[in-house]
Image (cartoon, rainbow, N blue to C red):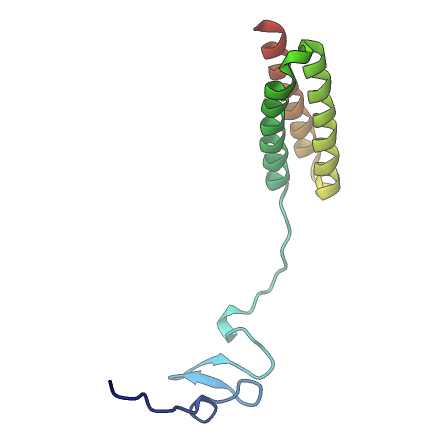
Amino acid sequence: MPERPEVDYRVDYPDPREQDIMAGDRRISRPDSSLPDWEVPDTSYRAIPIVWFTGAFILHLIAVHAIMLVFSSLGALAVVCISALAAGAVGKWTWDRGMKIAGAGWRIATVVILSLNLLYVAAVAFGG
């Protein structure tokens, strides 16, 4: 098997900290930026309320199913009370993530969906 020739990459490629790196006629890097010039972001990350709402809904839905499975032998009232505590914990976590600065519609929708999850738990616990 032939041996591979040694390549000194420091010589073949320019140092982006010292000079522009070009791809044809496009500059892909410059000394003051690690991003190509067409990729420079002009905004910052801002989480949106739908993410917090969906996270609260899915987390609480998973939690109440686990609570119903684990604590079903304690009785219906205990399951509903433990689920209400879980709803409070998920609600606080959601508010701390940023829901407190979201629009009133998102805050109301979050409280409503957590309440509907609790209504579901009560229907399952007392109904069957």
